[in-house]
Amino acid sequence: MQDITLSKKILIVDDDKDCAKFLTLVIRQLALVEMANDGSKGLEMLAKGYYDLIISDIDMPVMNGIDFFKEAKKSDLEIGKRIIFFTASYNPEKISYLKENNLVYLQKPTSLKVIRETVTNMLNKSYKRGVSGSDQYMGEKPCALYIK
Image (cartoon, rainbow, N blue to C red; front, side):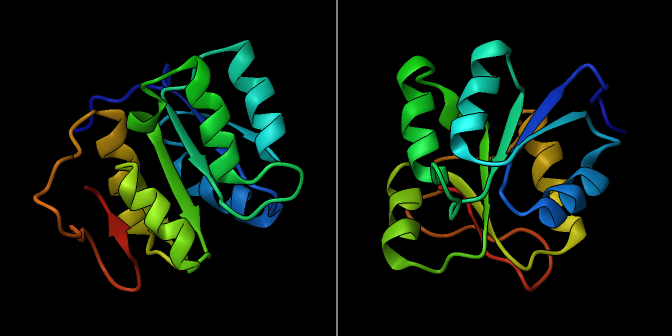
């Protein structure tokens, strides 16, 4: 049984409209969903209101997801507890940054089940952090979920 109501809000930050629409379809039963097409627009939306969860791509024009996170963190030190990076990036430097900063990420492609589970867990604050230094995988392949 889910205790999530549509009073929760999710912001999807992704320049790929098809991916943003796909994510919306997958999670729209869990919360109200709004979209921004890059990190700069995402920051504007964060300035206007609170989001219970943010799902961000990494590689975007104007402002990428990591720069978006760094800027958002300046006004909300706890934002790392409510952001999921959903990315096709396999850049070791970027992945290392996510791990070093204790951030949750899903690598594309990811199963619908894993997306829903991760979003539900994050909205319910029931995700696990601080797993002793190793990757924790939840769900079906193909997916890489890192929760440190």
